[in-house]
Amino acid sequence: MEWKEIRQRARERLQGYCRVCPQCDGRACAGEVPGFGGVGTGSSFRANYESLAQWKVNMRTIHGARDGDPTLKLFGYDLSTPILGAPIAGAQANLGGAMSDAELTAVLLEGCRLAGTIGMAGHVGEIALEEIKRQAGRGIMIHKPLEQAKIIAWGRKMAEVGAAAFGIDIDGAGLINMRLAGIYVEPKTPAQLAELVQNIPLPFIVKGIMTPAEAELAVQAGAAAIVVSNHGGRVLDHTPGVAQVLPAIARRVKGKITILTDGAVRTGVDVLKMLALGADAVLVGRPLIVAAVGGGAAGVKCLLERMTGELVQAMILTGCKTLADIGPHLLYQEEL
Image 1: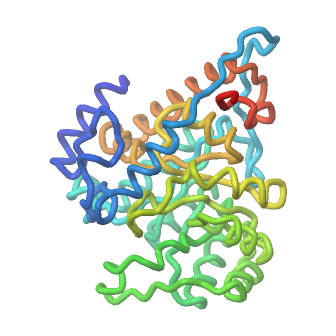
Image 2 (image 1 turned 30 degrees about the vertical axis):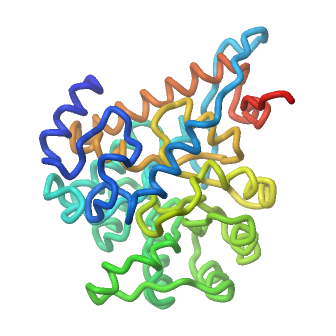
């Protein structure tokens, strides 16, 4: 299956909900929410893309790193790549009917498993439960920040089917469309976060961290991981890009908590950059939707393997034998 063919089929099936642009930078789809765009002016989506693009990589070729090993252990799983599938929901509204939530969740989790990694499911209830069960636990549900009792109940259900982890996208507190639909979402206090961690018997993930102070609060609450994310630029206009805030967050909490990140990751070199900026692994969202719509589980596998191959090539050309060798020294800083 060729990536060009997958993209063309996705463009036809998405019928304008996503134009499958040559550069997925948020310009053509600004304000298209529902859809693939960023909220308001689209500034936050574009900031993700532009802040990551601004970082350049030091090429190094005098070394002994003949092969790059992209494997890692995460949430008890041996993964073939540090690239995970991001949680995605709302298929009917955002994809124009190209796939249902059930179809999309099944394809994403299956494709991630086939590629040797883990996919995340969005706020899709029983669909996520059944699909993660079908994948023998190889999946993670990210729940919306609803009432405490509802989150705890779903976390325990996920533990019963052996899910790898469970979490909330706390930045979903600003999803006005959910409130208009009668679904109450809310921010969480540090005490509420701690209550969730203590009552859900799985590694707990807090997705939607954009400051060092809030990263520290997640550590203090006992969370297993954070996702440095502005929700793909879909909840608050005019935030900085993820690649702008990630270094300061890593300086504060690296080694205390697993740091995951998303934010316009499009290639294996982008993955290398995010790891060099302080992430332990990355999530990919919009490109995986294109892969799923255009090629099903095989398309998802194709994209993840393509990006992993690009990462390995970048590791060789920067002198990194393993992911542990990747660090800030790989990023170009102009000498004054």
